[in-house]
Image (cartoon, rainbow, N blue to C red; front, side):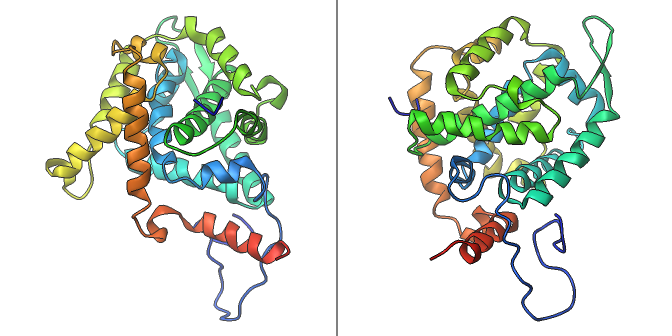
Length: 298
C-alpha cells in the first residue's frame, strides 16, 4: 500500500565578507543529508500547501491556539510569520548541524519566556509544555508527508515511517524527548486517536480558520484574482484535512472530498513545476545542494 546560520553565512545562506575569492564549502550535511527521506519530502514546493493544512489542524487544539492568539502578531504580519516559520523549517532540514541547533536554541529561548491562559479554565500554562510542542510537531510533519504523498510524491509505507523517525531529530530541537514523539505512521494515527477528545472548535480556532482562509494580502492584491487563487489553495488545504478534523470544523467529512482534494493537490504540484527554480526553492536549500555536490563522491 503506497502512502494514502550560522558560521559565516547570513540568514539567507549567503557568504559574508568582501573577499571575492570563493570560500570553502562546509562539508557538514546537517541533521538529515541527501540520502534521507526528509530531504526528498522537503524538496517539494507543495509543502507550502502542507504548512497551511497544518495551521488549520493545529487551530483545533484549544490551548495551542490560545497560546498563539495571546502571544502572536499573526493578524498584523501573517506573511512575515509564515516566512520566518519557513526559514526555520528549511534551516532544520537543509542547514548544517550547527545552523539547525542554533535555530532550535533560539526557538527554545523564545518559548521559555511565553505564557498563556486557558480560556476555558482560566489557568496559566507554558507555551513550551511538551503536550503542546508534541501536538505542533506531529501535525506539522504529518501534514508535510501526507500532503506531499497526496500531491503525487511516490513514497512507500516504509519511507513514510522513516520520515517520521527522522523528524524526531527536529522534535528534539524544540525541547521534546524523541522517545515521546511518534516515529511511524501507525504511531501518528494512535497519537491522533489519543488527543481527539481534547480537540474542539473554540472562538480562537474559528477566528484563526477564517483568517487563514481570507488573510489581508500585501501590495493591494486583496481585490485581484489573487484573492480567488488564495481561496482555492485554502480550500485544497482544508480538503486535505483528516475527515474527523473537517467534521470538527462543521465541514463535509464525506469520502468524496478526499479524491477531489488529492487531484487538486496534484494539479497544484504540477503547476508549481512551471515556476523558475529561484522562486521554488530558497538559498538555504541551494546551499545544502552545493555542500552535497562538493562533499559527496561523484
